[in-house]
Length: 494
Image (spheres, rainbow, N blue to C red):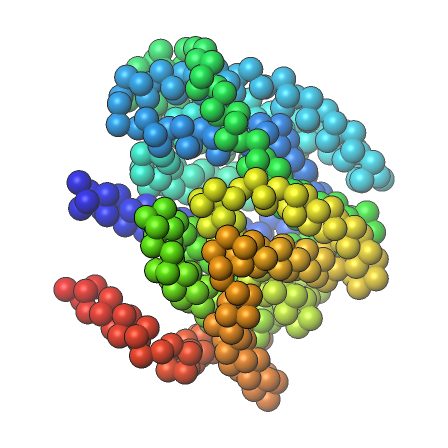
């Protein structure tokens, strides 16, 4: 059993990693082609629509988290699992009107934000993209795959979906379908994903899997688990998703393009860091539940240190090359400066650490205590974004999000002290040397320039990555940590 569980985990991590790399490469190739054919303004409007259509998902009130928890408890009993999936399918069918109501509200808000950019094409594009939520009930089988450690299947299907999306988006852009073509490409790719889920679910459980049923107890548990998760996740995401709308409101839809593309390299790193944090937290929570408080504290400090070092090893090279990377990829007019790259790196680190810490607190029974600070942080994020975007330009939204996330981290440090007897000074002491070393590498980078070519950008990135990685291992890891990594490398070689 243990070997099988390890095999599933390894396959899930591998396919997740390959998905991130493949989808990112496809995106890097497709984006300049699409922008060339539909123009900066239409691409900016598409990003605006994409972000705001995501708001419609808030109408589920966080029950996705409750669904996963409930499925993970009952995954071993096939008959019970099927009944539960039918219940979940029924729950999502009954909240479809809420999605529609959310879409109508967001539509009228978006018309106000878009202003002069609103048109019949814009309106049609919004409703085509919004109609993808009609497929949501069939995502019950996706939740089942994730709860049963078969995320690799989801990764493979979603990777194919993203490939299809970019191929269709390029095709429609080439045929001059502009904004409407991008919306149709999105709808077609989402339809492909859910049709595949329907096929796989029917193959495993039979066609009556899609017959909704009622189970009051199961539904209560789903809604109960989802409530606090809704406030935490939505408070964090609303501020981030509003960025493109605020940029459009203060400047123009065209300005969304440099704002978006200058974050692409950083977003790839963010996915890796969030994945690293998610892979660590469960084992720490288990230590706490086993009443091994001292081991928990020791491993928590070590995990914080490791995640911070891993973050900075990736983020410092990103800061150094980001402007030239975007310039080579999308043209100099779309490349934002070093200040933006530094603010982006701060946002990525604070985001990754907050996700990691949130899972630790939630896993040890402190999710409810995070609701209030997340709501306050979300409100502050939007207010600061409005002020900073007006005052500082395109770096404003990133800077605002970074400060809001830093505020959350300070609140969580207080919770760590209260619940785990982990002092703030001790936590900061573990990560401070990594920032000192990173600052030194950044300072030295001012004495050379990054060549404006793919070879030059790649070479400088890799040299800094390797140098900072080696220096971090030699200077920041203690003897015990070095021996641990040598031991792991030896096991891998076997």
